[in-house]
Length: 318
Image (cartoon, rainbow, N blue to C red; front, side, top):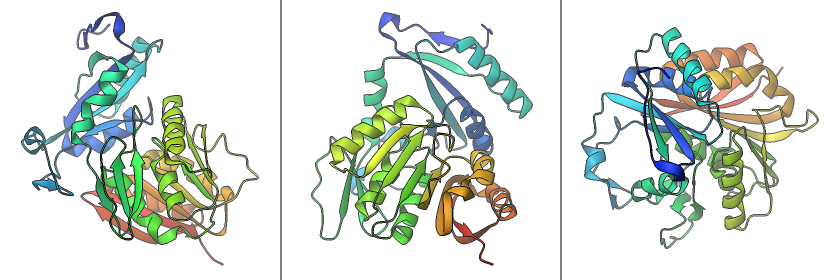
């Protein structure tokens, strides 16, 4: 193993290996794109936008408020049995190709420890005018008109705290129609499909390349009591039947992956369908828009939050 890689031995109870890379904030989007080639479920540590003392009525931990806001980190978690040396070699090559000077940090993490350690930072958060994302272990009394979405992300991405997720949820309020058919590509914890269902969608399909994410999403769907959501494993759209058509497709991924799926997504949409694309850092928005427009799409709406962008997209009308 390369001497730049440092791995802490946590004994025989270790089930996961964490690979963490830290870069200057300006390279976060590049790093996120590279790490997403290893896994679609990422842990992103970016504290540059935190300048408030409260988060929907709860105090933010002092260590987060005082964190270095000039750098950011991205982590992926590999289950036991994964080819770690091969993954590290791939990561090293991609970082070098992108001109990123960073050494991955490795640590062994027990699944229960990893899944529970961050819970102290995850508090209820209201998004848009109606939806409130509430951790499964927190007590919360709904106010009039609020729709409660209880989530336990476990080992998957999707708590509602990140700008990319919040942006899509805001768009869902605008584009979910009663009984509409929804596909969520890269579902993570299942949060977007659950939000869509709460807003009145009919059948919802949610897929992710990571089997852990699919398991977590299924658990959250089951705990929500919703009967109209199906979660399954798929590499982007490959596991979706080509005969399927959806009124609404959501993809909260990263810019490069959205661009990659752009040539194929249109065949799953009818004339009036809408694609909600997020996970796009604002500097890459023009690249994504250009790719979408080149494949027959028109931008219906663009919203931004703290350097991140989400798009509502429809097919160009003749």
